Picture 1 (spheres, rainbow, N blue to C red):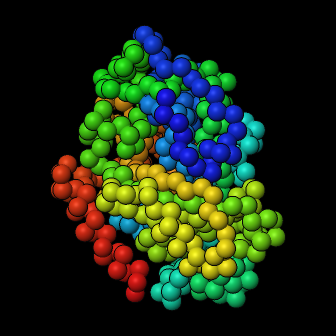
Picture 2: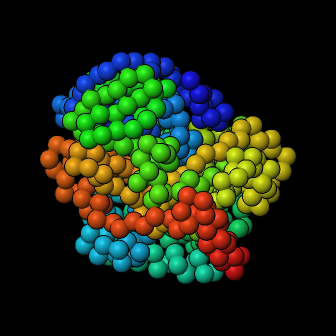
Picture 3: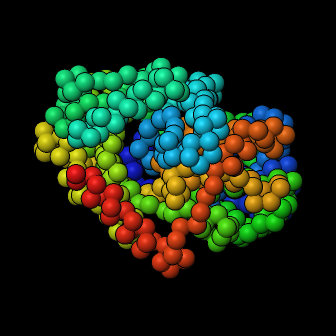
Length: 421
């Protein structure tokens, strides 16, 4: 059975039980494919509604992005509200926003109700690197407070930002007391444990090879179910080619320093917020519970060498915090984020009884949890909120199976150049 990534999260994870691979034929009401946040949340909410559920995970629970991400929990979606309004209209876009905010409330509720020990810390900051960003932040503040009635966010001027972060890189920021950060692997493992206590049967080391409306084939058996929920994202691959064409795996990289000690870590981020900047190839960082700095920002669209970037990521960290030049990097790991062409989440049905959740585009910590709840609602007959997301139009990445990634690399050059302006 493949281990989890050799990450700081793996080294600091709580109990990681092994679940046996599926052997033979089983029956249930709902089969969930994928053991990340979305799949575990869907399974948990379905079980709480009285459905019998089997969850299949190809590797280990939390093996993918859910267990190795930056751990930042934020409202909204990656595409932004303006683009979403153009896609589905103002009313539906507002409904998507409201669901994303509810996702944060749900996440905190799940942590408390199921006593998930995942180092949850409130507070996030979106920072401006250049004057253009600062102007955009002020516009964003007006949109959030006045049009979306989101009151937990405020503007931080340059002086306050520089008193809060141990760097002179940023010109301003938006602080959101409703956002925050957590240990993503422990959170995912906690959701899985809660689902298991609710009666879900979990099987690891079990790849879904293919499916029909009522059957999932695996190497060691099959699951016969009345409904399916596909939450495998980029790892579904040829098991669901219609979904694979709508998303692309983007490589990202994170490093964790050696423990800095309480005082030195606090000097970097006084308020202990999750921080990210506004560049397209963004930097994101936060403090860990044991006083390390976790820093991400290396992105690869090529699919080549995306996980061998500790030196480049450390260089980006030192550009923000040059005072860490003497600090050793103790952990370095990578992973894949699934993105859609329009950066909006991709939910829907392949068949009347086959649901899917994918395309979180870097906003999965909070959104994936509420997505699992929406899928459970839809299967239970309350599909209104799920169907708002299903209305978002999605196109295949251009170029077909061979040229789609080179086409993406060329398109991203524009945004990389824009970061320099």
